[in-house]
Image (cartoon, rainbow, N blue to C red; front, side):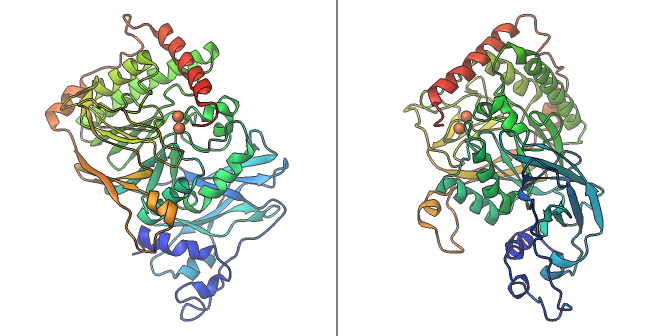
Length: 477
Ligand SMILES: [Fe+2]
Ligand SMILES: [Fe+2]
């Protein structure tokens, strides 16, 4: 059986010519195969990244870029990694399936974004694939892990950028080899310079072409054409900015947190999103009570509560509305960024510890410069640290074990191969008991029907919050 760790350990070598000599058994004992190298062309694929836009068990969507305005074609060739295949064969055996995707202009640069979805995949098998076209050229063969099922791991960070720490986080990912990665907004910090996105996806490519990447927009994504820079480059489910999916027995729900709202014209879309989130979480709570899933995880850029200096919830009305949903439907974990700190709460609600509340994990230490903590934290805050790093969640039956790793020393010094990153926080979240699940399942969506709530004020406050972020951050955060 080929494991995920084996694949991630072996596949970087597939990038390095001459390929054969670098791979175990290659050229001797396995038929002397010759791995397929990238095929350079007039528009060679770059910036590969993989996500789910369909069923995580049986599909993977690949996105990539080509330079120039003409469309050379958007083809993915793929097939399973069969038991017993040598690394050389993985990189060279014929790819039996082929799908033609689509392309569209990439926002703000002379390039095209290509997207194609592999389907009918065997959940138990790793996937090998390449992208490109006869006219433009081909990538080399990359390998994706099998589908995450009952027992899996995912990593979370936000506020990534392209610093030494950002790169150390990616190296940490490579080593941790999770089944997929969540980036909770503020990805590239292009801040209006669209070419920065190209550099960012070049940086991500070695990881994101081998581990699915699920994202939500943050306030910095709004700086690129109101989110068009982001939308035109990533492929996420639904409208691409808010969506949900199940992985094993965990339901993931992603929100924009209102990050892309820049005027009253967008009010309808945010209101529609909030209504959808409420309904989606209510349905997830129902399915959890029925035993179909065990956990609900909510992901967005913004914190609900924070111990970051000067960053108290900037929009109390949206926080009130959102937190009402999290508490009404019994969200288990809230994974966020935005504040460039690491903070983890106890189970909480309305800024107090609450047994049946949610655990907020603020992992804003993905690489951008760190902020400051307030001196006296409230009782809900279990841990708050100024550290760069990432958080890994291991899902196993009724328990999620969570570990947060710090990367500063690695970023500054480059630690020797095999050095373990320090764990700066560790905790577990246990699945709710049947009676608690039943209570949450009884709650119906009401966020948009609550006549006592001033939705117009919430929209105005969100526009104002986003405007103030723009002014205060001045392109730096
Ligand atoms: Fe940020
Ligand atoms: Fe942010």
